[in-house]
Length: 126
Image (cartoon, rainbow, N blue to C red; front, side, top):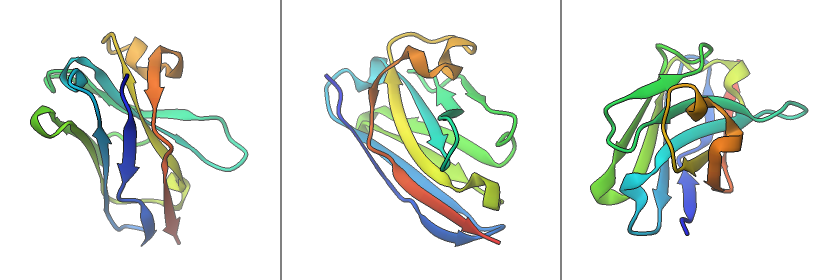
């Protein structure tokens, strides 16, 4: 079992930055692929970014590439997402999730993730 708790969301002006954190319980955190997804009102949950268990590979949605950076610290059981140059269309509830397997393709599918956090709200004003 893995329990995930997100933090770091908030209200920011367009062009600003936020850093999200996701703290995980469980001794096997370092073996999981970790991903970030987001869901805006009235829209489906969409993939944002994911990182391999070792931290040596990551994949991003085209909409955030070059602006967001995912990272992890396995010693602290925590995954991060640095979000820069935020836009109003980035407004959503951001959730982290854990998956057993890694590939650059499957990591983008929400169906691959076994454990989910409750999410943290990010609001970007124009």
